[in-house]
Length: 154
Length: 190
Image 1 (cartoon, rainbow over the protein chains, first blue to last red):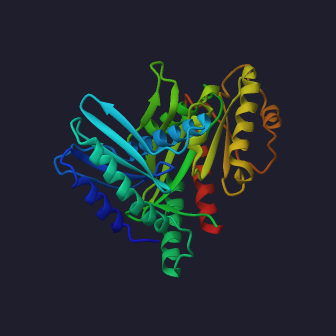
Image 2: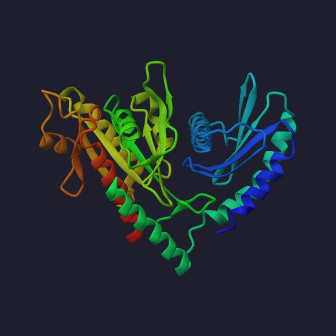
Image 3: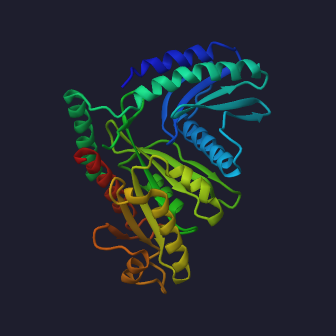
């Protein structure tokens, strides 16, 4: 499994490319938000919810393309009166960029494409099914046992 | 080997999906859990629905019983035309809560929905992906009998079954605890 900080580094690199980019989120195709970065001035949002919707919308569009036999989905762009949302494939995940309305679309597409390759590699490592070290395995088991105990007390 | 999904903070995420026919009570059950069960920590309730509050894509709430394990709980849109959306929501699911409708006129809808679920998840259903069944709307005067519903769904004795009234919350918490427990145990011992 790769270092999760690698995601922050790449997402930060993306957010710095254009001052109009407000938020960058990396989700997997099950709706799980893996990492996200924001501009400091950006208003607080429920990132888990945004990630779940971004992943679902992208996957639904992929399914639509498959049904219509029009090839692989590259990018989904949603244009709002005060902002834009871009979502593109990056291997096993979806890269989502939230921006202001006036933004350099060509640049954003280029950056997403370029960094998407790097993110795909990191995601492959992050999501790889590898035998856990005994220490990691024990930690996971402790977390699961604790959740089980808490669940009974609900 | 079953994978354990984690976020960048190392927290374990388990995905649970309420599945079943249209208007069977999936969203009602999730809203009851969200609004009434105090022991669960919950994030925001996200609903993608139409103007009549019928689910168009999914509802979603992250929940936790505390600690570093989170349940990402989804419902699906039950109407037949939303088949592809359901397939999308099912991606990566760790456990299923199937909400069957006890109303006799929903007999075919229950069967079709369960068959569709089996088609989407294949052999993994009940093996890698645990399932708990809620027989909902047990307050209906003309409800189907429990045995009739189990026969209808082709369920034997190895699937946990809960009789529920989602609008009142009857049985809902126990059914949720059951699927959450099954999913955790599956992760611990597989």
